Image 1 (tube, rainbow, N blue to C red):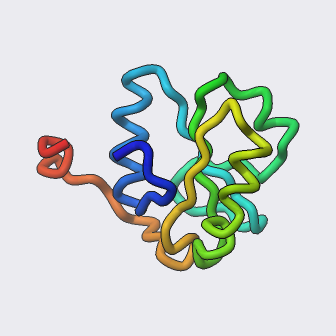
Image 2 (cartoon, one colour; image 1 turned 90 degrees about the vertical axis):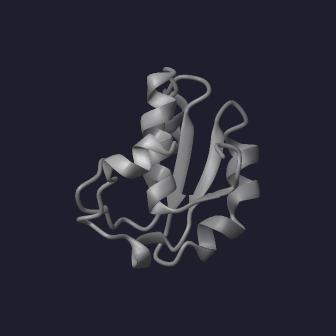
Length: 108
């Protein structure tokens, strides 16, 4: 579940909640200078990213998700102390008003 190379928006929310309960930080990384609405993102900045706690999970996104998925091996080599994931569908599939329902959380 946590170890796939690509997460949907639903998986991002669900995994973030579960991982942060275990003390693992999940950070959404903007690679296209277009922040997503209703969620905290940081712009791709290797220096800033290297200051994050070891084991942090970086979730990269672009417009379609294709470019970040193709670059995932590059990101993994550049940030070996961190887990790197691509956001499926990128900004194009992002639903700003999406929320996890309690039913989904109960099934986790």
